[in-house]
Every structure is written in structure tokens, then in C-alpha cells.
Image (cartoon, rainbow, N blue to C red; front, side, top):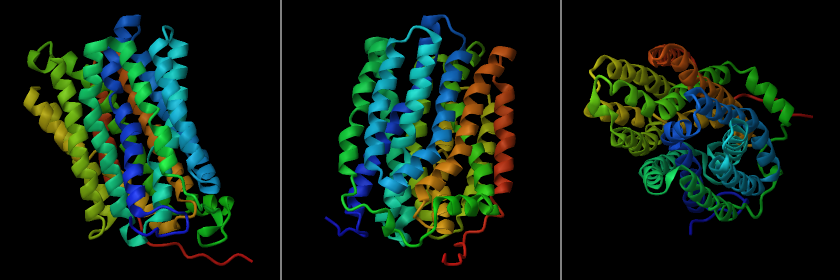
Amino acid sequence: MTKPFSNAGLSMKEVLIYGGLMVTLSMGIRHGFGLFNLPITSANGWGRETFALTIALQNLIWGAVQPVTGALADRYGAFKIMVAGGILYALGLAGMAVSSDVMNFTLAGGLLIGLAQTATTYSVVYGILGRNVPAEKRVWAMGITAAAGSFGQFLMIPAEQGLLSAFGTQDALLMLALMASLMIPTAFMLREKNFSHSHALGDQTIKQALKEAVSNPSFRYLTLGYFVCGFQVVFIAVHLAPYLKDVSANYPAVGAPVVATTALALIGLFNIFGTYSSGILAQRFPKRYLLSAIYIGRSIAITAFLLLPPSPMSTYIFAAIMGFLWLSTIPLTNGIVAQIFGVKYLTMLSGLVFFSHQLGSFCGAFLGGYLFDQTGSYLIVWEIAIGLGVFAFLVNLPVKERAVKRVANA
């Protein structure tokens, strides 16, 4: 066992193993929600807008509450936060399974799981990581943890499709609820036994930290870029499978369920390599340039996907490219936040910039369903995703990756 870096009581090895397991479960389960879109809406006679609104609300709550959850984790430690998150995650999935009306389904899948994700995903885990990993290895470790979440996405897509095929929607969701409950013992393994809020250097208050962040131009640029990330990835995760079903009217080969399942699994698989690579490259190249390259790469990939005739092979290539660029923004963005502002309020500030990501996620999920119901096509939303990628490419270029200078408080 490697020696703990800080007095919080966890070694880097423990943080990477159990933090990776936490995000494997939390991110892996949610990545497969798009597979439930058509089965749930068809069984209940709902439009796609209903399912899309639930997922959009989930992402909005996740983003809106994340800074609050992050502040609590920074102040009191992440352990209790993660235990509560595991409980809420399981309850939300069980609620989705037994709900037959829109309101209950939205409360379970939107509110409960949205709250659960604030406590079990990257922001909280990265806060633990920031306190227990040396600064020179921080972005690399963030990349490792993000890669674990990517592995969860790769693993859970075929698993969730298998559960759907073998047991049906309701039982599949109940089994996922049991799986989500494994986050609770994982939280115990991430308990920082000697955690103390005062161990972080500096006597800056929460109010001062917030004021410093929102007045910093680089923080605002990162926030705007992260909106685009959320829009693109959630739109594709939720609506790629229905999109392929729609275009199968003219291109029957892409309509087979295995194509959508394989595509989403490839996103998760190549996401592993993308997030790990971003952590490695961030130690050699400016992180802002890597972020800009990711966003413009996404726009190019989407444009090519729309221009080429739909086929299983073009879909798989698109999924592999998007997967490599999928969550590679996470270690880069959080690494810049830690580099500029330090780790004392890293969970809260990461949560604040993540709120913008989730606003984008809300728009991507909801507009996908809404504009499809209005126009009968996803084309407008694809075009929005392309334009936003160009915008994010530009807005990340002026980010300054240097620590802020502070005057000591009296």
C-alpha cells in the first residue's frame, strides 16, 4: 500500500481503485438510459418528449445541486454524501421501474437520480483525489478515474441491453437498482478517516472562493465550453438509438437494435482510451489547446456522420471517434480549475463549472425530444451540436492556466 499523500488517510492507490469503482457504477448505469427510451415510451403510450424531459430534468438537477453537494463535501468530507447518493440512486431506479404515470416516473428518474449523481460522480470523487494525490500527478489521476467511468459505460451498455432482452424493462431497472446499491460499501472504502477541512492550505472562505472564481475570465471560458460538452454528449447518448431507428426507413441495416447497442458500447470503450490519453497529454501540452481540439474534433465527426450514407460501419466509426472525445474534457477542465484555484474548494468549484455542463445536458436531452416531436427529425439538433462545437473550440483558446495570486487574509 502506497503511503498517504495527505493526512486524510487514503493512499493514491485506494483513491484510484475505489474512486474508479464509484464512477464506474454511477456513470456506467446512466450511460445506458438511452436504451430504455423506446421501450418505456412505447409501453406507456408516451411521446419521446416525456422520456427526454425526465433525462433533461435529471441532468439539470445534477448540475444545479452539484455546487451545494460539493461545498458540503469540501466542508464535512465526501463519505456521508456518497452514502446518501448510493441510496438515492437505487431508489430512483426502483421508482422508474414501478412508475406508470409521467409524474412519478419524472420524480424518480429526474429528481432522485439527479440528486444521486451529485454525490457519486466526478466532482465529489475528484475532490477526494485532489486532497490525496500530489499536484504533479493530479491530472493523470483524474484521467485514470475518468477512464474507469468510461469502462463502466462500455461494460454497462451490453449488460443493460441483455437485461432488457432477458427480463423486460421493469425487472431490468430493478436489477440496476441492486447494482447501484453497491455504491454504498464503495463509499465506506473512500472514507477519509482523518479528514479535516483545515488541512487544505489557506484561510479563504466559501464566499471568497466563489467571488474569486466567477470574476476570473478563464473560469468563465471553461464554464461556457463545458455547456457545449454537456449538450453534445447527452443528446447523442439519449437520442442516437432513436435516430438510427428513424433513418432505418431508408437504410434498413442501421435499424437493428445491435447497431445502437454496439455504437453506445464503442463510445464507452474508446472513451477509456480518450480519457486516459487526455490525462497523459495534459502533462506535456497546454490543457486549453487540448480542450479546443476535442470540441472542434466533435464538430468534424458529427458533420461527417451526417454527410455519409448511414450504415453500421459509418455508425461504428462515428461512435469510436466520439468515444475518444467523449469525457476527455473532464480531467482537463477539472485539472485547470485545480491549477488556477487550488484544492481547498475544488469539489465546489468543479461543481459550479459542471452546472453549465448540465445546463447543456438539459438542452441536449430536451431539445432532442422536443424538436423531433415538432419537426419529425433530429437534423436541427445535430446542426446545433456542430455549431456549438465550433464555439467551444474558440472560447477555450484564451484560458490562462496559472494559479491566481491571493493577498493573505488578516
